[in-house]
Image (cartoon, rainbow, N blue to C red; front, top):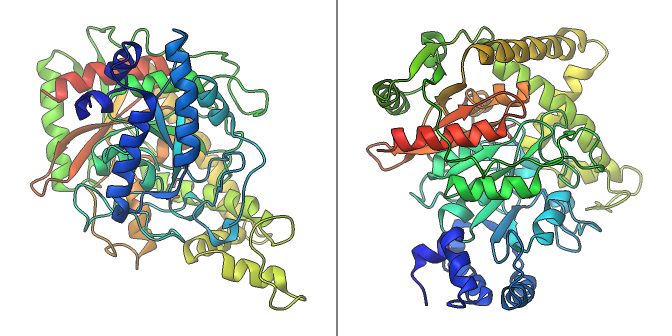
Amino acid sequence: MLSENIINDYFQLRKEYENNNISVSEVVQYFIKNINDNEDLNAFITVTDKEALESAKISETHFANKSPRKLEGLVVAVKDNISTKDISTTCASKILENYNPIYDATVIDRLKNEGAIIIGKTNLDEFAMGSSNENSFYGKVLNPVDKDYVPGGSSGGSAVAVAANMCHISLGSETGGSVRQPASFTGIYGMKPSYGAISRWGLIAFGSSLDQIGIFSRSLEENSLVFDVISGKDKNDPTSTQIENFNTLENINHKQDKLKIGILNEESLKFADFDVLKVYQNSMIKLEKAGYELIELNFDYAKVWIPTYYIISTAEASSNLSRYDGVLYGYRNESDSDDFIKKTRDTGFGSEVKRRILLGTYVLSAGHHEAYYLKALKARRKIKENYENMLQNVDLIFLPTTPTPAFKFGEKTDNPVKMYMSDIYTVAANLAGAPAISIPVDKNSNGLPIGLQVQTGRYEEEKLYQLSKQLSKIINT
Ligand code: GLN
């Protein structure tokens, strides 16, 4: 057997596949063993071991025929709100407990067409609503760095699957930070694309004007490789980009001199705790030493990022989730035929999902939609304009991913507003439709990882990967 370091690094592994030093089946077995050995982390809802081993055989013939595809033998875990044909897709909700989609999401199609192997479906906060992965019908997910701490959410299972070497890559979803925040809490890379860069076809909707599929990885190169395969125009998603293909990997090592880096002003820094500030400040010192210009940005609307996000996302959620009524598919409470819809929704949804539906219905209601929903739409436009203006004067925005490192289980569950504040540094990119990457940078004195973010303009993914690579080299040495 090859060393774990080689198996865990797809670029090295691919050479070994090509030279016949290891088979794809052996690699799949290795990851299945890691999944089973770490069952207590609760990262997976469904492990598709049988299907993965069948796909491994097909990949082996591609290597034998010297015709490997772009992702041949790359092992991927998928968040359980992304549709997989004939494979249970629950959104970690009782209401979709027995739901098997009849089609694959576009991202799944594209992965499979290039030879990637799906190893299973990962745990999440119910319907992707949460920041700690404590809201799953299938139980909480533990952080492998320290099991007393949350892994972040809502894509906690996908983050843990990569952080604990249960796959090469995983897919998560973002509405307001659900890839970048758990990436930061578990010490890996997490990428959220521009709105429209990756098709949403088959991603079960939460807040449709914000939702995007994102990518977790242990290296930027693997992240960019997968992005190039799954991104680009999709006729099934009318909100997807007109760009046919992104090509981010080719120039990822390209270097730009004289960078202008936009940083947080004092006002927006005050949300961050001491540990995060220290890591952020140390990184800025290194960037200045490297000769880059740091420019303080005026985030004019930072105060309203969180309220704007929570009004728009809950409004859209209340509409999207109205389809779960026990009639067409999913769980149905049969107890009383007259009001089974009410009972189905009452017993099928967890408490955070119900809170969001209530909030969303309220902000859209006849008496209140002007005061809340329409105002939030205006605020969103201002936030977007502010982002676009800032990005005309700098090459990138550089900021913390989260205001604190991972927190303990139960620490924020009694206070939703405190929980919602975990998203303070992530939601603006979703509201603006801009792409962003969380880079693992350092640890605090308890060994908990801390990540920092790079953000660029909409559809500037090539620049995003390239600058993330350039910066991560400097701040990680
Ligand atoms: N934590 C945020 C929320 O609870 C973000 C969720 C997400 O990005 N899916 O809404």
